[in-house]
Image 1 (cartoon, rainbow, N blue to C red):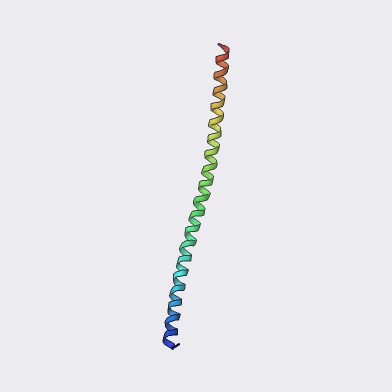
Image 2: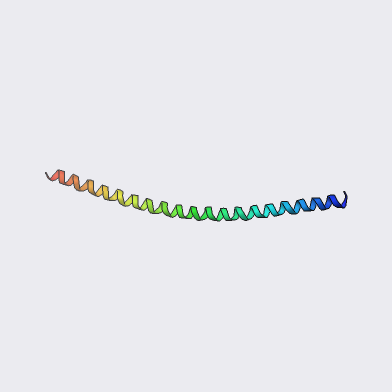
Length: 73
């Protein structure tokens, strides 16, 4: 191998390394964003489950009251 071909190969490797470093940085940011979104969605899901349970409980209480009113008539 000649000195110029080795230099060219080194330049190509440096360029590839820069590309990979940039890609790593972008993916790291994307991963952080996705993890934050996941955390937010998990929290929202928990809130919605709680609201759903509260609504279910209220509906069940209303049904019991309606049945007792019906039985009283």
